[in-house]
Image (cartoon, rainbow, N blue to C red; front, side):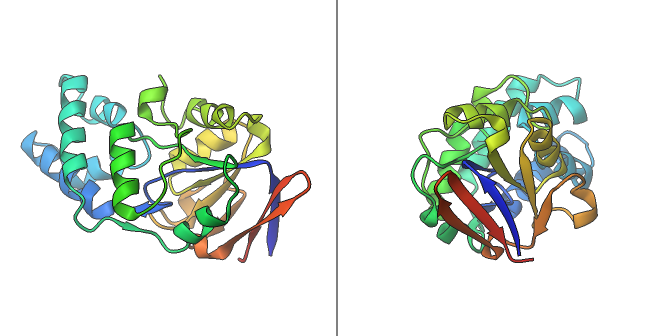
Amino acid sequence: MFAFPCKGILFDLDGVLVDSTPCVTRVWSSWAQGHGLDPTYVVEVAHGQRTIETVRKVAPLLDAQHETDRIERLEIDDTVGLQVLPGAQELLAALPPGRFTIVTSGTRRLASKRLRVAGLPVPDTMVTADDVTRGKPDPEPYVAGARALGLEPGSCLVFEDAPSGIRAAKSAGMFAIGVLTTYPAEELVGADAIVTTLQAVAVKISSTGLIVELAL
């Protein structure tokens, strides 16, 4: 059993709370094929970073904002196979209000749609691609997440499934717990601990905040 004291928890969305892999794979593969790009490579790059940054990386000659808007519309409309990940609903329900939020590389519209489809709450404090100028692996999204909860970054703990998110959390001075849904453990370099699912996570309320316990 590992225990991490903190004052607040920041969750990545896709791959941590919801499984959107079928949707992401369909949309990005179709988009890649339409532009003569390698779908496997594009899907791999798309995980864990903002859409506009993915487009700039894999297709620098295209109008990044135009393509981002198009991809977002497709992702919002595609929810087939989207589901809540094991342990996510129970963990969120166990947390006191104001002690957690979501920090995602998706837009607010897309994140809200996926949360509603999965039956999860949409936090008022959620930080999305719309709220930052630099996405993960830059620390800006997680620093903004801590600020949204009124906390110092160093007092927060992050759950992430992607290497870029782990780097962002650590650069922000936070504990980072990797979740093995998208990448193998050897790629989650820098994570303070790794769990298979959120079912391995329990939270206790302490006099100073929270104690996050991991059954490894």
